[in-house]
Length: 311
Image (cartoon, rainbow, N blue to C red; front, side, top):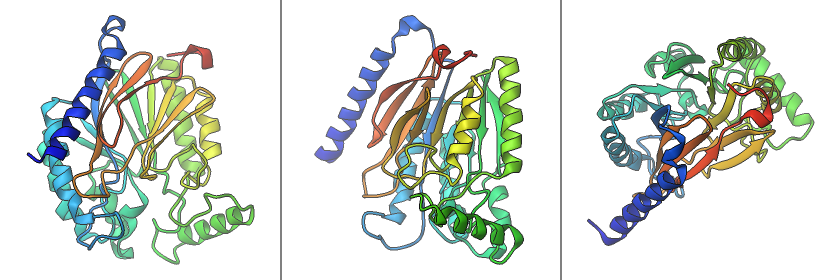
């Protein structure tokens, strides 16, 4: 093993041990543990700057081998499993099989960098039940949003949804926000109504909710969903929404918005031998992130009683 790689792995192991110690076993066992990877962005393409697309295969292979040892119930992938070309799915998706457990995908903007005729096949190819969906594990509800619902790339060019998205983008750009970009998207009114019902049901059941999407809601640095503020306002109304997890911004971020942690995870893409993924351990009051590579380990306090009725 190369000395540089050995030192990196040793540092990561020490960091994880430190986070586990800080988490405090006296506060009880984790409710749930699961893996998280985002923005694999594989393509059979030459490097572009620091983005080494083909290197996503060996890095994903190493990540799945690591996560498989944890005996987790599932792993989340928060969008952009490919960078471009529908054929890329057939190359990269089988590498997730080494996990030995299900992968819960959601949609990213690059997942739609495919021919118009193939866009309708993306959801089924990723094994998703719908463009957006929810599932429950160990009494925790996961809400998987589609932040590409309203966008200029998801739907065939010239279709009604595509034309409507062009109008939305033009209207947004007229007010000059930094997220009025063609690689961002938003959540439709239909999906927002569905989200409201999911969260209301979780409130009634006193069920904690982890909300996931591809685009950030915060910080407002240009990567956030087109209607991020509308989504945030909805989440803030429901105390069982404990945290928001996303990808898209490859550098990652961590912001607390009115008590709701908004965590952007770093992309596994980029320089060869530099990875980024994590094991997440959910407790009643905190999320322990055991990072690998450039995803740092830390403890995130969940939205709790001080921000409303806790679940």
